[in-house]
Structure formats: structure tokens, C-alpha cells
Image 1 (cartoon, helix red, strand yellow):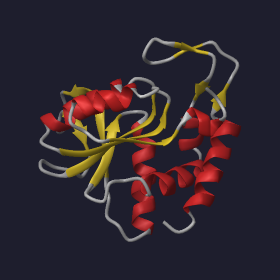
Image 2 (spheres, one colour):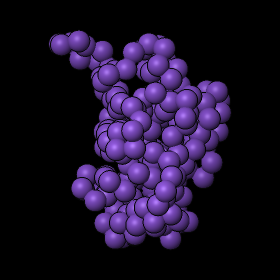
Image 3 (cartoon, one colour):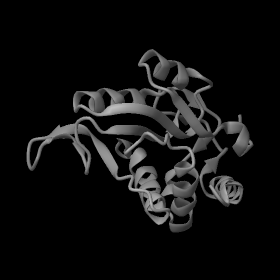
Length: 185
């Protein structure tokens, strides 16, 4: 994608300035304790940060994918920003969300958005430390009949465990950013 290196560098700078915290300790979703934390929403919820995320993530989306999404709340802003970036580049790539629990009203269920059975999708996550949210999203997406072609984390701090978990599910895994890119380990 034209301009990708500039978007990537600017995204790294935005994350470092707004989202990386090194004043831990912090307890992660996985229960692990870390001396650094990445609050990706400080970037994904900002106008400029979302634009950067959308452009950079779009360049990593598997070309077979026809929709993108994952478990709410982490995946939602990444998926929406990427769908908007895709539209700006003339590509139809709608976003979807997977609720944490099924709703008893409206259409019910956990899958929300313009996607249906048989659609090839990429499962997204903002930050992964074990791949647990992605595993849950894949399970729900498969139950809904979606065809998972790829799983992608904006930031992978799992040290390889997320890739292993995806491989166990037969899903190719990729990451846009690693802790080394952010200057933290």
C-alpha cells in the first residue's frame, strides 16, 4: 500500500505517546502481571490514531477476507477503522462484532453486523497476550457459519502463544506490531 511505512511509523509514535504505560505492575486479561501495559484504545478511539490503525491494519488483511471483526470491545474500533480505510481505497470490507454474550432481544445472538454464513473473514484483536479473545471470537464465528481465513492482532505481546493457539485451530495468525516495535519487552 502506498505510504504504508509512513503510516506505520506514525502509528508506532502515536501508540508510544498515548497508549504505552510503563508505570506498572499491571494485571493483563490473561491474569499475567506485566511491568508495561498498552491501552490501545488511547489510539484506536482517537481520530488520528484510528486513521493510522485503519490504514496499517488494512495492509495486513488477507485478500480472501470479505469482512473483518472480532470480540467486542478490543476488536471493534480496529475493525471499523479498517473498514473505513478499505472503503477509501475502493474495497468493500464490512466490519462485524461478536458480543461477549448473546442478547435475548432484537435479532439476538452474539454476531452483529453485515456478515452472514459462508463469508470469509479475518478475526481481529487490538492487543493479545495469549490469544484467548481471538479463540473465543473464532469459536463464535464458526458457530455462525463464517469461514475464518486469518486472525490478526494489532499488537501481539504473546511471545508466540497466540500463533500456537491459532495454529491449533487451523487459522493463520499475523501481528502488525510487537513489543520490540514499541520499545518495551
